[in-house]
Image (cartoon, rainbow, N blue to C red; front, side, top):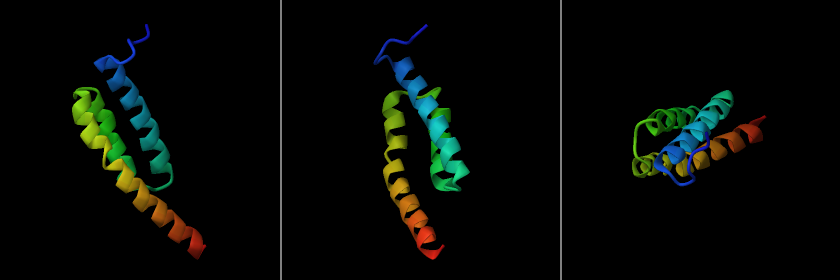
Length: 78
């Protein structure tokens, strides 16, 4: 059964699935800060309202920038 597009449950399910993917991918690359935040989002997506999830997703942008800088520094050294 597909969820109703835009429904609270559908949004939470999609956020949880994407957070799970992000958690795994970032952990594989050693990007612990991003992986840990994704794990929090994945867990909270199962119980929290989407407005709360928005506040958990917002820090990902800054975390991604720091991760990109770290990867670029590593690439320059190797």
